[in-house]
Image (cartoon, rainbow, N blue to C red; front, side, top):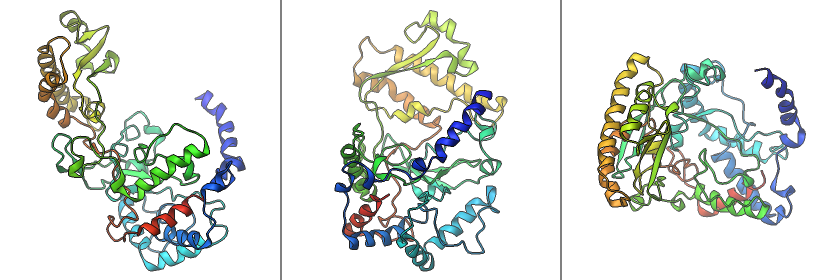
Length: 399
């Protein structure tokens, strides 16, 4: 704590630096102006489209809130009702006409954070739910003291639709309460330099090129995918059925878990099992595999080893499920011959797939879907034409 306090003034000074606060606009970057239009009509159209379709979330300058909406007073358990009222107001002609005037003002970008910093329910965003399902900051977890009580009191956003990674079919999933289910609005400052997009950087390519030209190459491809979702990558197995990208293993692989990260009930078995099954338990760790090519990565990375909001006694059935699954894994994987191929591994892994899905902390596997604003897929909004989207992109380049 002392070291953190000692470093805080330096961090504050960095954020208060005017150069940092102003962001880094494309026009000021080397050869940045070559990537922008100078046509006033295009930029004017882009401003109108931004005001009507984006500014409700991505502008810290906005019309005064109606008297019926007090976001400070209705935080916590009442937040979702307030958000819904705010969102309804943001779709009205009154809000949009006022917002157009604000965006067209010469000083619109001056001191504008380009975000409301509000919590947007994932039911509206339709983006991948794994980040909003994170539990580190909920009550009783490691970041408990770093999150507010109003965060912990947030209600459930309701049901979302997710895809089964084994058959591509949709099914419903009820989002839990207690802080989960919402995404803070990111700032669009220097948007040109931060592609690929969304919280998991899944929309657009990562070029690895930090030059202005390299960043613009990533921006052009990424912003197209944001506004034309049909251009986004699709799943290797069910993409033809409309399923967005599911991260899958590209080669046969192994999951290695150090013993210290296993639940107490499983940790106690490491030493005796390392003598009986050294190929799976050895050097104080659990080694599961071979995991066949094409296995959803999320199936393994989001296994819920224990429930976050129940007592130790209430978690005992979960430990029993995990031990049962481990026994099945040991039996099936032990039956594999040395240097087993993918087809053999798939047959052995088949018995583990559905139990792992049932134990998943986040059964949402499509990583690059959602944020359909401007496409007409969001209720109460209209689709932009291709020319509209191009004009909007030109304005976004000025951030």
